[in-house]
Length: 410
Image (cartoon, rainbow, N blue to C red):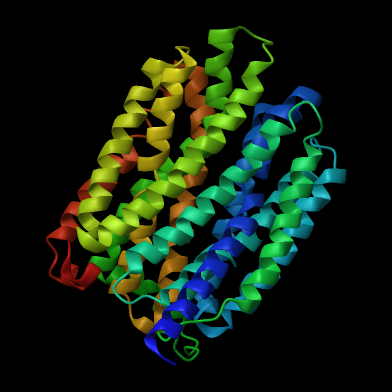
């Protein structure tokens, strides 16, 4: 095979993987996207509303924790894990169409969907790393961009189905996930793929024992403290802000909030790609520190725009959507470059497990903070994460092992 054929095969495989990731991850935020419509139709408590988002994260944490300890991502054929997880998640998401939104079964099904997502996102990262050749940042950025678009897709569907039936959003995203489960089966692995690793439960502890890995993980944890609090509550924040500007009951509120939320996540896809491209050329620690500094600033500025002119808030939120995710893939890229090649899947899975564990705090924290001090100041508590992550990546930048990252570009 000549170099041209090899490159074509690489981008075909990476493209299929990214498309599969986009389609499957659409079921992740289907709960958050349909929540305003569900609350308008059915009386559910604030706790139940929080569980729509948080129980999926709980399931994801449980799934990734078990996967990391057992080393599944490094021991089993990744296409099989991804496909089975996507198929099961699609069925569970579709089942919610026939379940009363106030039923205690809903959090259980969302928990199950979260477990399934643990078999998709980290495994997809492991798959794309097998194709990396000096472009780890771009490839991981492409995958996170697909994840971001997939997460935003339910908001787009819900925007245009507003007033029709939120169950159609669940149906559309389940069909998308089933399609992704099929596509991933023909996404091949690259030349960096290794033979299955031996079972070694203690291998997961290397994420803590290795100082460089630990610092990269701490950077990711700070990023995650913010990310899903922003993504998970953005549509609610916008609904509340637009209600102040337009007045309660205005028909523009729900449509504009859902459409802009999709725009925020769509802009994030651009941010993820741009962040990956820059990180391969400028340096991973430089890009992650710049992104976290900017997103922390957005957290602190958002409240001053609450209830103000929608177009100003829209421009601001689109910028926030870019910087809040621009660094995300680069933490995974850093870990994959710093880790033992045989344990790349395990290290990425361990990283995401703890990162999403932290999102459980902020997802439940935000509505409580809003009740106490309002949307004007709520996101200040979220800014703590990226500020601490900025410090961790600064420490990694001065670590000797940082030369392993992005070909020595810190």
